[in-house]
Amino acid sequence: MEPIRTTTREERQSLLEAAGYNLFAVPAEAILIDLLTDSGTAAMSTAQWAAVMRGDESYAGSPSFTRFRESVQAIFGFRHVIPTHQGRAAERILFTVMCKRGDVVPNNAHFDTTRANCEFAGAEAVDLPVPEAAQPALVHPFKGNMDVAGLERLIAEAGPARVPLVMLTITNNSGGGQPVSMENIRAVRAVCGKHGIPLYLDACRFAENAHFIRLREPGYANRPARQIAREMFSHADGCTMSAKKDGMANIGGFLCTNDDALAQQEKNLLILTEGFPTYGGLSGRDLEAIAVGLNEALEEDYLNYRIASTAYLGNHIARAGVPIVQPPGGHAIYIDARAFLPHLPIEQFPGVALAIELYLEGGIRSCEIGTLMLGRHAKMDLVRLAIPRRVYTQSHIDYVVEIILGVFAHREGIRGVELTYEAPFLRHFTARFRRLEAP
Ligand SMILES: *Cc1c(COP(=O)(O)O)cnc(C)c1O
Image (tube, rainbow, N blue to C red; front, side, top):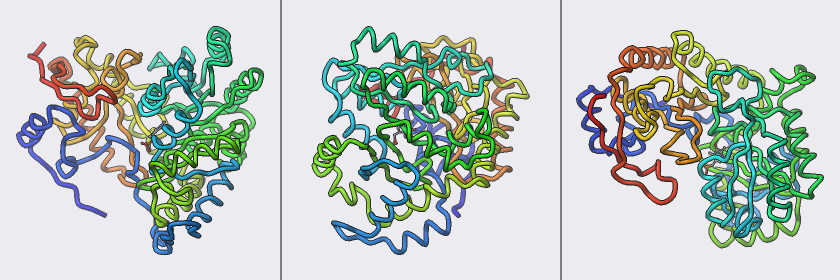
C-alpha cells in the first residue's frame, strides 16, 4: 500500500510547463490516479511475494529458472523459453534473428515497440486490422482480428520469401485492447501454413484474450481460460511476451519458439546483451514472481473482476456521451479524442491535448495512442486509460469518471498543442510541446 498525494491546479500547471506538457516527464508523486499504463504497475499478490523470498540467484541453472520455465511451458506449450528483461528485448532478438532488409512483417496491429524493433531490423511493419477496428463507436466482439483476405493479398504481392513471420497481437493494444477470436487465429494459421510462414503471437494479454473468447465465441463458454490459452498457443510457432502485463510482475518478459535452430541463435544474441539463458536479464526472484503471476492471471475470479471493472469505467463515461472505443477493452478504456475534440485538427494532437486536460483537471495521468505515438500509421487519436492490475478500487474509478465528465462539459475550450522537440524513434516518450492559443 502506498499514499497518493493531491496537488492544486496551480501546481499541476507549473509541473506541466516544466515537463514540456509531456505526462511521461511528470513525477509519479504528483499524480493522483495513474492510468498511464498497465505495464509493470500490478500489485503483486501474497503468493508472489512469498515466491520472491525463495528466489535463487545462481548465475547458471538456478532452480528459480526451472520453476519459471515449467510455469511458462505448462501454459504456453512451446519447446524453448528464453527469459528477457521485458517484452521489447524479446522483440529485438526475434526480429534480429528472423528479419532482413526488405522483409515485410504483417500484424493485426503492431504495438509501438514492436513496430520500432521490426523497422530497426530493416523490415517493414504492416498493420492488417479488420475494417471494423477503424470505427471506434462500432460494437463488434472481436475487433482485434486480422484481415485474413488482406494477409493473403500482402503475401501474394510481396512473395512469401519476403515474409519471415506473421504476428498476431492478443489483445490488440494500439487498437483498443480488443480481442482476437480463436476462429481468426485458426484462419491466420491456415494462411501461414499454406505458405510455410511461421506464426508468432505477441502474447502480452493472453489471459484477457482467452477470457474474451470464453465470453464471446460460440463453443468456449464452459472452458477454463487456461485451456483456451493452450489452444491459442497450439496454433503458433512461438511468441513474445511482456510479463509486465498478464505476467502480473513488475519487470520481465520472454521469447518462445519451437524451432531448435532459431532458439540457438536467439540464445547467442541473448548472452550478448541480456544475460545467460537461465536468467536473461532478470534476477531469480523476478523469475519466481512471473512463474506465480502467469497462473494468477488465468484465475476465473480474477478475470471476471478485471474485465468487469474495466467495463465499469467505460460504460459510465459512455452513458454520459463520452465517445470511447466500443466495446470496452480488457486492460483499458480508450477515449476517441477526435470525436471528443472535433474543433481540433489532427496536426494539433487532440489526444495529447485531452490527456493534458485530464491531468490539469484532476491529476489523472493517461496516455495518447494516436498521431504522437504512431505518426502517419495512426488511424485514430485515442487517449488510453489503462487500469493497473489489482491496484485501484471502485471509488478511485468513480473519481476518474467524475473528472472525465467535468472535462467533457467544457471541451469546446480545450486548446491544441504543437511539438517543440521529437526524437527519431518512439518520440512520444520524450517529446515536448507548446500549448496553442484558445480556439
Ligand atoms: C507492452 C507491450 C509490448 C512491449 O513490452 P515491454 O515489456 O514494455 O517491453 C509489446 N507488445 C504489446 C502488445 C505490449 O502491450
